[in-house]
Amino acid sequence: MKDLYDVIVVGAGPAGSTAARYAAADGASVMVLEKDRDVGYPVRCAEAVSHEGVAQFIEPDPKWIAATVSKFRIVVPNGNSIVPRLDGIGYILERRIFDYELAKLAVQEGAELVTKAYVYDLLKVNGKIEGVRALIKDQKVEIRSKVVVGADGVESRVGKWAGIDTTCHIHDMESCAQVTLSGVSVEDGILDFYFGEKVAPGGYLWVFPKGRNTANVGIGISVETAKERAPVRYLEDFIEKRYPNAAVLTRIAGGVPCATTCDEIVKNNVILVGDAAHQVNPVSGGGIISGMIGGMLAGQVAAEAIRRNDLTFLREYEARWHKRLGWRHEVFYCIKEAIYEFSDETLNKLCDEARKLPEEKRTVGGIFRTALWNRPSLLLEVAKVFIS
Image 1: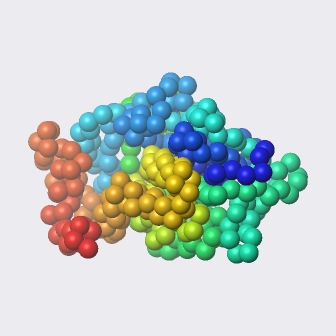
Image 2 (image 1 turned 135 degrees about the vertical axis):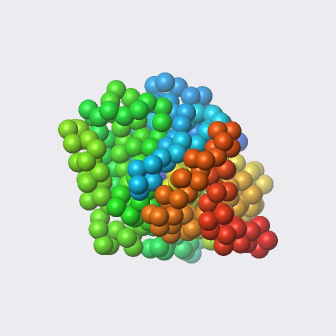
């Protein structure tokens, strides 16, 4: 371990490893510090990604693909469903292997990586951030760097230490629970999403096949709703009804920030990526690919700032993120606010209307347009994003 690096990345998830990879590829010296013993563990994710999203970063490999999907089905409260036509395919990942491969790509570009490295503070000298303080092999160490990348998850501690407000309003925080079930009969190649007050009030429940009669079954509802009844209770009810004889292989729970990106994702020489920057899609709660895109942009900008010897250039990351995905997430947030307020009656009606669409128009866009007719005020909210 060197005394000084150009970039220190805190966290070796997809966003952190991708930031490290692109910074190192552009010539920066990079150290990645991961608090857990193994990269990719524990898994706190539904593990679904699109082919287009993942292929821009890594060649799809069967060793980290549990299942390939080409359809998704929306199930409404009365039991009816609609299967929109999709262009392209998606994957259900084996995140432990996938994250490991992403970390390997970073190391191949020249980044160094240390696990069981617990970062407990930023290293500040005369008020200036000059690296991190970490506990490695039971020893306290100080590692200096010119730039620190916080890839340490929702409500990032790195961000807070740097003075960035990473707080997610309770209204926008999703409380999630998921189990991996074995011994279940699920349809291959299709993702199921269940909506309704009795199943997942103010959110949705999912069933993602993972091959060999295995599936990730999870739920995400707002923290406000979870105060009245925990999401795991809705999940248990669903499993007892649909898969009473299933064996539970894993259980996970946690929070997902379904908000717009943090107002500030750069402060001085600290930048945030992934969940730490709230780069999750507000509608779906998916954050793997968007976090990797944020990581790529952050790594590229950090390396360029080092080459320029001008850390004020780090602000370019905010501009590039907003241009690439941030503006879309603002639109998605407006859509989320509307969809999650739909009553069971409205959801049933939307499904009935969508099922009347000709096959060629039964797309996500076609269904969304049907929803707009039922919620005209949503048009104004979406328009505000483009005119503000």
